Amino acid sequence: QPATTSAASTPEQYPTSHEQVQTVIDTHNFLDNKFVPSKATTWIDLHDPATNNLVTRVPQSTDEELKAAVESAEKAFPEWKSKSLLHRQQIMFKFVSLIREHWDRLAASIVMEQGKTFADARGDVLRGLQVAETACGITTQMLGEVLEVSKDMETRTYREPLGIVAGICPFNFPAMIPLWCLPIATITGNCIIIKPSERDPGAAMILAELAEKAGFPPGVVNIVHGAARTVDFIIDEPAIKAISFVGSNRAGEYIYTRGSANGKRVQANLGAKNHAAVLPDCNKNHALNAIVGAAFGAAGQRCMALSTLVMVGETKDWVAEIAERAKGLSVNGGFEEGAELGPVISPQSKQRIEELIKSAEDEGATILLDGRGYKPPKYPNGNWVGPTVITNVTADMKCYTEEIFGPVLVCLNVDTLDEAIELINKNPYGNGTAIFTNSGSTATKFQHQVEAGQVGVNVPIPVPLPMFSFTGNKKSIAGGGASNFYGKPGLNFYTQLKTVTSLWRAEDALATKASVVMPT
Ligand code: NAD
Image (cartoon, rainbow, N blue to C red; front, side):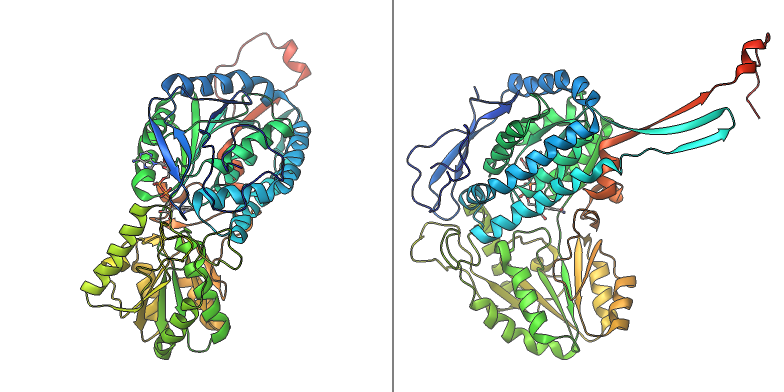
């Protein structure tokens, strides 16, 4: 069964192995609640990262198709906006229950196109599903404010949708990131156009199918495909009022700058280099397991991967144990029983990661555990990099200054907590950080002084649940973090306030002369 849907399937119809896909079905656009074959002349081949077999072809959607998505959304918006909030909430309840029903099918698509293990891919779906579940309760947050200004005058605020909004997604969370955008955008009355990553659009296509089944009217959710050209269309299309972007700094800074210059709201979550400070007084066993899990899970391709270890004082002697635990991880095809990390996304990505490991070697660091050259016997053609631990790293080395985005842990040594905080604060990225300690005062000092948007205390990947917000800072978010995904900031991003002031004064009818001064 092909992983990428272009037609509806049942929750049970999904691939369970990396066997060669017999019939390669092109990925379609999703317009007006229908899967529409593209008339593209340029196609992007999508390969299973575990085998490099062709899975599907993704179109570079044509200008006509991109315009059709906008026209479809423009047509849908007035009626969708005027539906009651409770009506939209009922559709969201249905959407949530369909995602649960198709959970494994969504996860299988992610395994096939992105390379995650099946268990981890289920987590990708769940973290997005939780945003949709929380969005069902947005009814109370949609309340406006009323002030009785005087006995006959009042001012009220209303939250109104923006119109058409767009989501531009990265490859590393094919279900979660579309679900950071779609539920909040639509329940608040917007229509959304999603451009999934051209490297793994399958999960977004299944979500589109489920959106239609849940009762979203045609045009409220549209999906278009492609790479930079589609992005440029979205940035420059005047009817699109807001863009939610998640991805690299290179693309995101460009989208933020040009999108903002075009008068759009843009929220953009970008790259990362997340540090963990390990203190000698921590629960060692918990810390080592947490670090290994967070550094190598999803083959290090999470924006919150714990890629950098700051070993304080004597904890520098723990690296051998970290390498030992990392060595024990099972690297295999994501459908294989017991697989703990899968391949990286592409041969180019593998090559880049290996070059960064080599650069560390050349610059004098120690490759304590070397994952280069590893291949699971059943999958000789995949994009494999085994867990790699690099020690004796210094802050000027390329493996430290660049986001590696692979299963590579770089370890630096410092003598004190103050030095650890200084190092973390000097790093330009500020997505997340963690401290491992059993001292409340040490943790409190770290929490207050460290400059990163998400802080974990004995928690390696402190991504907040959807009642909070994803709060990276510094270079990890564009525009100084003026807008965050989901939670209250997400609601603010997808709505604009309208303030209505009313005067109902019977005496006014008797006045015969206009007043031209500002009321005082
Ligand atoms: P990417 O920037 O290559 O791609 C993201 C999106 O931008 C895709 O849809 C792609 O088509 C588009 N794009 C790529 N290059 C473009 C260009 N030159 N012009 C216009 N559009 C372009 O990112 P990726 O490799 O898919 O994802 C990995 C990156 O995303 C990492 O840096 C990771 O840290 C980051 N990320 C950040 C968060 C976060 O919340 N901070 C979450 C997930 C991923």
